[in-house]
Length: 97
Image (cartoon, rainbow, N blue to C red; front, side, top):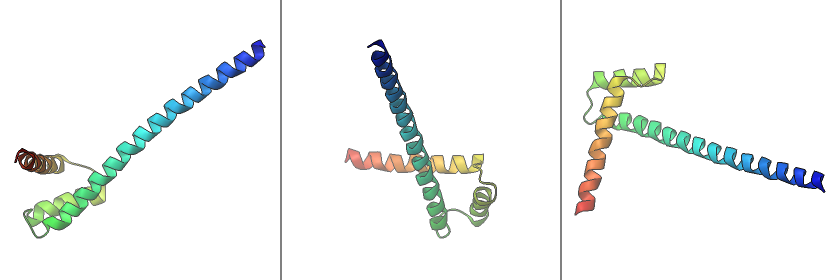
């Protein structure tokens, strides 16, 4: 009888640990998906910027930094933080109407 109780407790503990691991894995992959979506946004925005606002040298520096080195430098972070702030501002204005 005691052996059955011990195995039951061990089984429940194992199930609980697996649930916690699944929750952590789900959260991790959700964050990865958000990052991939953001990278896609940057890539599409750079393609769109070829004709719009971004000057050629700045756009090429950003493309080189992202494609060759795979890094975000301060210029990229500043540029896209401003772009995202502008979009959020426009959304807020539309919601206010």
